[in-house]
Length: 268
Length: 337
Image (cartoon, rainbow over all chains, first blue to last red; front, side):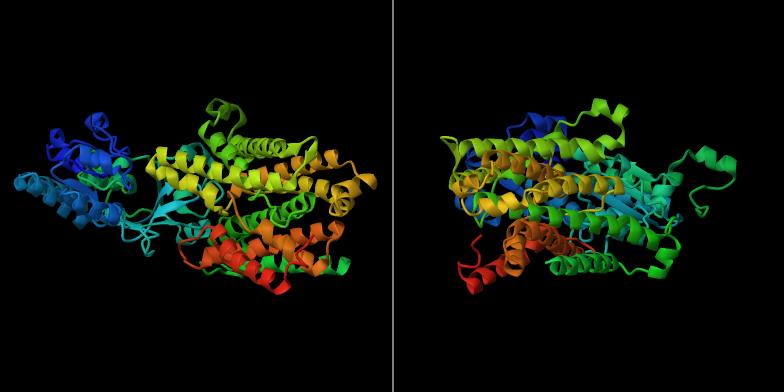
């Protein structure tokens, strides 16, 4: 068993980690993955290293793996499976198909059921809360944000938010500041882990009309859970919902003392 | 002569105004002006996001064009520009290294000022100056500067730097890579007025310094020997121009990355219009470069709205074909310096 993509923790989460023979250089989660042999970057894995590992199957992502390279691997007699991670549904389907590949479809069903349960739980929790306009940035300068056609856009919606760049056709895009001002996000999440973190200090300071800035709701929240498509989408959703609607996640006993759930009270 | 520059100046002001009024989101101008000093979305879009970006674009377009003019004259080569000479590349690498080895321990003392205005422009300036000195040294034989060697080593140096940046790009985190690519592509973004102000100061100092060399530049286009006989200290002139343009390029690249074509194309276009007297050509190119980049950036903001394009794509997209058309129409004679 081997694989060629940043989605290596699919097998890990499914309990098949010991059957992986190689991961990409970007793979750093879970910790066990760091000890596995590296096969190169996920867009440009080294063909000969893959072949030398004699994997039974190579797992890749259809939007990242070079089709010519996939064909070349097939020509060399390797079994290549490309999964899609564009939408939330794709990710769940991918989990199931990898579990099937490993000969244990029920493990996949169980994990998907658990993620589904997470999704339902969060949906219920934020159901009564007002929808908040959200900007999720992965790059500070230039400003790179999550657009539409991206599973993170779906996660934001499920978490009771509305992605202000969700109308864009690109999954990731550069956004001009004026668009941010015009859409007035109520929550800004900086999820990127770039070296430019130190520059973000005063990034939004000038934009006093943006509710997220005036209400102190700009979160520097470097999170690979949120950014990377994989079995942790359920946890990612919980994290996102916690950032967008923190009032829904306070201690229930506090809510009782106040006589009502703070989650349902309309926010000014 | 003053007429041409006057017209260009007027055009620049109109362009800056026009570009401030155009953008991917609709704007209520009356409301914007009524609420200049209060946190109103229209006012913030106009005065906090568009205007500083337009002002930055004008400074960078003008600075690039001015650097192109002097480098072409000094090297007596129509291909010279910050890109070709490897100076932009050196500045980019300096800036990137400055970002990676950011002195965090200085932050509590210097505060946001450090990140915004001084540290990265400083490392970019050092990168620009160092690469210029290096390329200059490699092109110096028996105390004489060989323009062709200079150009060749510059082009090669720039490719080398691009490879180094791509290498850094492939070893950093995937999401960090987005930030590094911007140094190669070149793009403008909204900056605080403080940053824009400092970039203007760097560029104005560099520009005025270059402008005082206008007459010497006129003479040096006649050939190095001729200029020497007419009393130009060519060695000192070369050094001063290298330092002044490194200062400008370092400042520009530190905020916008490598924006191509402005420094190459605008000087040629303006030479066709106003002639080769550098005392006139320099300000004319500065103004025209500002106008060009101002409009290019407006297109970059609007074309794929709400997404924005790196402005380097627009300048190359319009600059490339236009430059070829100019070459074809004018033949080789008029493009001579």
